[in-house]
Image (cartoon, rainbow, N blue to C red; front, top):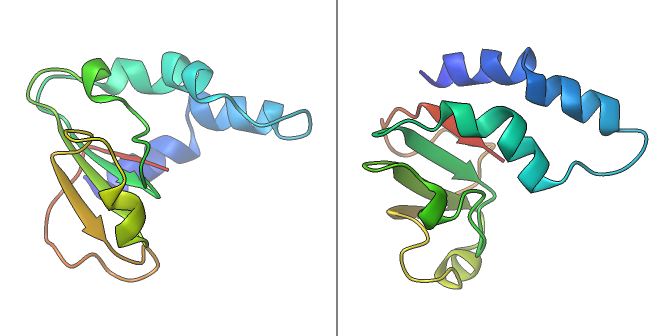
Length: 110
């Protein structure tokens, strides 16, 4: 499923949006979420939020029922600074290294 997420990011409206905005300004999270990510949020989806820190990419109140959000950041302190309930699980880990768990994710955000 992780491979599916990667190919989705390579040829998707989000990739097109980022490419068109690259020379002008940074893409705003709400715009990118509305255009590309929101349709992928289905009940029970497993999300890996890479570089999550204290601010999840998708706030808990915007996640569908049964969604599992895992926050991954290199800084354990940043993850501890997240509001209670921001993630169902957190991992302090360097994303350039293989993940220490065999878990599959439907959606990977960064």
